[in-house]
Length: 325
Image (tube, rainbow, N blue to C red):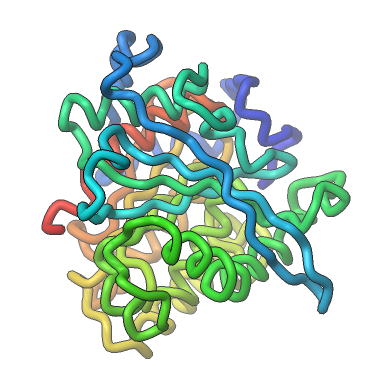
């Protein structure tokens, strides 16, 4: 990210002096988003509150095993419906953040705006009841670098190794997703019920997952971040090459344009719009792989690089997922 900031979701980062943010404002396909209703800031009724659990699993990095934590949101009614199966979203944080930053730790009464948004949106049937998993790409906290660009190798490693080999099997053998086993054939067969999302460096991770794990995921929600598959900040510095590589990767698969969906978004005052907008424009030139229906790009008006905008973006994108599940 070309911005002197931390991915601290409690801090707003308005950038009125950003010369690139007008790129998003002027895009015909960069549509504004609704705002989360003020009532969503309040604790939901007890009967509609989801429960967050901590899941511990083993990951490996450079031939060393690490005990990893992920937090798992289970919608209200999960324990009372032992035969019901659920769609699932894997949601990744940004630089220097923790696995519990989105959901606020275990329990049902967290103050987390993201968790409260899920509770209210599910209760009001804006989104279907679903499971949300928030992991971390850091093997442990000693791997947190001094700058966000130091995360890039960990983002790629997580997307191509830990996610498919360690996290997804650990989660989906324990919780009632649509996968009835964790055999690769079954995980591929249930990809229509699986999404990956991420904020900032988590969005970098999301683009890597799209590129490398399309056989496991149908839906993607990159928030405030571009693809670094060609080079760092490639959405700004090499958008055509980046789009060419992503389109070529999809073309090598058997998936058609209606087999996947990307709902990309960014705050209008977030400097990362300068990286996202050129990439989206170049992706749209590959009309066989990316269309107005499977590649959406929307702007959260007034949103910065912060938690409030991230919640707004997810509030708008999640209803688009799993519509035919």
